[in-house]
Length: 77
Image: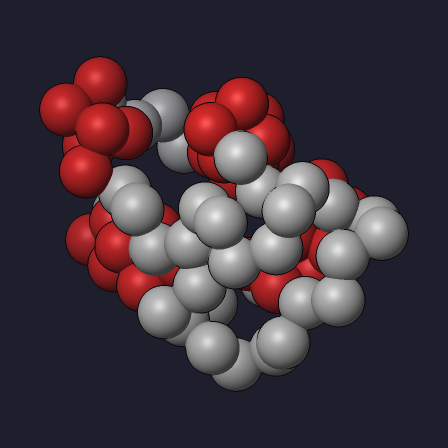
């Protein structure tokens, strides 16, 4: 089963991702910059077969925000 931390590790393979910390967001490690964040959100959409609205994308700053948006769509995490 795919989870957000596995996707982070996939998107940022050289980063040390602390699992379970939903407060993580861009800047948590050097690789996670604004472009990396956008690409991560695209990966999340693809992995969970969802599409986020542009206003949602702009408000998703932390893993917690992404998790909440997925849960609102009925995605089981």
